[in-house]
Length: 441
Image (cartoon, rainbow, N blue to C red; front, side, top):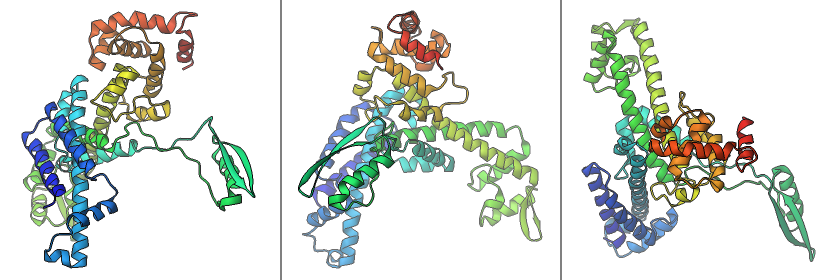
């Protein structure tokens, strides 16, 4: 066995032991970081084809029959390369989970840490959570995909040589159609350019894929368990529904699924007929209409609870991060290193999408952008005091609300509120211009 494969076995064994222990331990972070550094040094982060070539070099001394046959050899090499990539990705998710646990603890969400994929096995965690957990996870992933935003107030000076003459052209990048035309006109003389597209590099609020995976898995699985409990409690008020769902559970099926949607399951179908939950009409199994309608409504509510609950977890953690830390503090906060420390309002718009229906903050994307704009001239107070104080004043709330919402000390927020209020409201003072911006809304 090559040294790289020994490392793969060692890392997976370590991650398996973390899963078995069933808890997050901050003391593991140095070991996880050491494994990550060693794996990257050995080329585990290289492009896939480069890893296949690397595997060929590592296994060239093997004389087994499966390495003599070309098709088997290629299959083996691809398997080894895939195994390395899988192990590195699993390690990264585990490392992100261990870091996020600190943020969840400090923000008052310690109960969510138990749903983090501590050993990196997020697919298993989502599978255990079922269809609705997976749907909530993919919903969050789609919201946080890095996006390309339009370029504004930017230009580029292009130099080109045509017919022995050097030409200079300043191109306005704020209008992609004009920019493409100008560049084509300039560069086409020498390069035969047919088409040019102007685009920014994709940006995202959470830059690192493994951090998104760890956070969204915990949010989705935690929300699904909470939603499942709520649906179970509501089920108890309807005797017929309880009896039907108990029948489903008896056969290993999740609650609220119409029996007509299940293929096979003949024994279940017969019991549904005997229990009066369904009937056969012209040889076709049909459910009792009122019960089927109730099941569809419950499934829709269950789905909504999972998606909204997962979004609320992510929203709460990110809001706490941006409000309770100054820019420099966000950059140095080791629990959330992959979260964009200085986002613009375009990136923050996702917070508006995630905002819970009854949330006290109005236009959280704008409020967070305003809070961060104020940081350059912030009062000489701890960030965890003046940040919540600012959000409370902007929302028409008091210090008690801010202390509960942001998991900070009420006394510190209460002391900060008059200072912050003076900063943003003193006529002619340094907060006057900022206040005018708030009043326009």
